[in-house]
Image: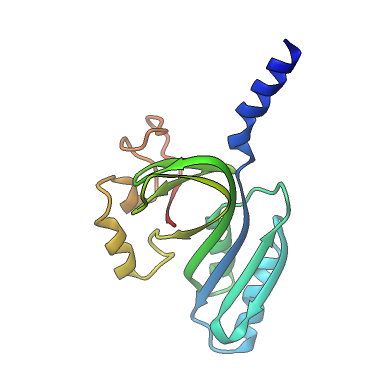
Amino acid sequence: MKKIILIALLLWSLPGMAQIKSAHLVASGLTCSMCSKAIYKALEALPAVMTVEADIEHSAYDVVFKPGSDIAPDELKKAVEDAGFFVAALDITATVSNAAVANDAHINIGAATYHFIDVKGQTLNGDVKLTLVDKNYVPAGVHKKYGRKTSMKCFATGYMDSCCPQHEKGNSKRIYHVTI
């Protein structure tokens, strides 16, 4: 009986093991190496960050997070904006276990909820690269393109609405829209 309970608890906790492992961020508005250094320092100062590698030529940053840490994409975006710049693109690598996704499916990774846009039904396992397609994470034309692939209201606002299965009335939680 103890083995059955232990196995049930382990299986129940597996979805909670999903976490963001790393991110590849491209910034815009940079004009010099000092700009790059400002973003580097801002990202490096985040408590969840283990390492940051800058690619000055492409205004890109590879960020690796501490194991077990919980970070949301908006924290990265805020760090870049507080340094005086903007996010032009953000890909995250998440470690997931048996996450069933399809167009307009929602899954939790860490404390955040991710809404999949323009994906075919599949089960994700291991490290998966997700591209954020939310407003202010991609150019307006790209955001508009993905907006045509869903009829859910949350895509326009970035916050859960009655269209979202996890929506609680009166509590609009942040939701991130991603594609694979």
